[in-house]
Image (cartoon, rainbow, N blue to C red; front, side, top):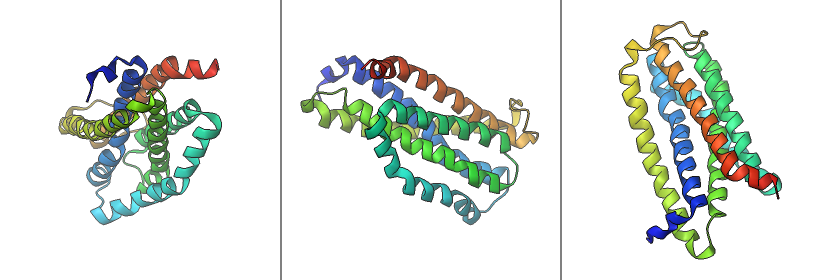
Amino acid sequence: MNPAIFRNKEYSMGMAIAFVLIAVGFGIPFLTPLMLSNVNGLSPALIGFIMLPSALVTAFLGRKGGKLADEKGNPFLLYTASTLLVGGFIILSSIVGMSPTYTQIFLTLGVLGQSYMQIAMSNTISRTLPKNEIGIGMGLLSMFNFIAAAGSTAVIGKVLDGGTSAVQLNPFVHDKVAFVYSNVLLTLAVIVVVMTLLYYYQFGRKSNNK
């Protein structure tokens, strides 16, 4: 690998944004089973049943994300994904400890947003590279996916370990056991907003000016 690829500022910024957003997205499949087990007391079989519809809906609507990127551009798809993710995180943060049915319904927003986010970032990053660097550039993005997933689960897991001392950030949550899960979800929503703003300043404005 030629390190000179990182001299491409658009590529480097795109990779940094993608790394954080991918890490945030991986928080969904990691955090949800723990939340349903520790707060709602569900068995692994029931947790799988709760999470299945969101996966099916995402698989069904996945092609729609690609079409949106082709028809309206990658920034539009990323903003759509960001809206879904932020909405999903905030709602899930507010219903922690409530009926798992609510989680089953609103989890779809986050999972679908995660899928669209990966499509938008992959397309955006690929367009920052000349043809002779696309192979190595996108290969590095794939490697970053694994690193982001590992880093995300490690950090979130560490935060959850100290959950007994968590303060209440979301006024809709009253179960002390649920505070840490609610707080993490709110934090992930804020991170998505910040990364979306960075994306807009780096890529979105240029798209609007074309």
